[in-house]
Length: 335
Image (cartoon, rainbow, N blue to C red; front, side, top):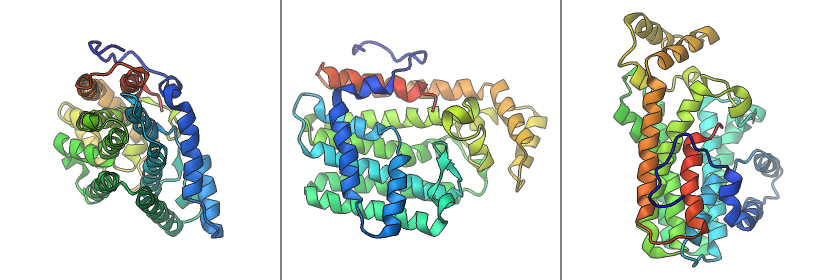
């Protein structure tokens, strides 16, 4: 994708193709993750082995590795830093599932469901602490600062969400603030750390790229709650609604729904156990008044901002091409 091309919402890049320039390094990242979380304590070993089986697609490590490759000056520390980024991401997911009492993640039972909430919280702490130990071994203070800042922002975001008692009082600005904390912060840090062990002059541009990409990524994820299927996303449609999470499509829809739909939505958020029919009704109402189209447009705006950030880096190579393709993947993926 050239610097002048716009990001088309009709174009979805295959993640495997994006990862191709760093495929060998990603294999090493998985090995590094195994090394970092190795434990002779049986319960830790059992849970960690399970987490490795349910790990995601390594999108954040991919971004770090690609950023480190732009300009051809990548350092060997990139692999270890990529592993640490994935472990921090995994720790947040384990904690989030425990806080939300979720039973599925990526179509598989969560740690808190298979074991209990105490084990899940301690496991997340274990992953965080192992990550810190690895960063101290590497000895890059700037990487410690970048990841610590992102971790702090993610915890603040989780607390913001937890204490939002009036879910329908959540504004669009509140929504962006939450997305910035919970998703964009870590993607920005991953890209920043890639520049740290690559070409340092590109770090600021990479930070802005990662932030905008993370915002687009999260909006696309929120859209999947209305458009996806349990088979493709690993969680049922309306999962966020069931957990009383208000995202951008609903925020926009509440500005336009008819009084009857508004009342139905307000009653829904007061119920302890909403029915599937109620959730389907809200999903339908959001679709009818353009909530999905509005959110999709905002995802496109952030995607354009990510593309513009990369325009500030005067390099044309395979790693840069892959980073540009990652924007299409972020807004068009189906899970």
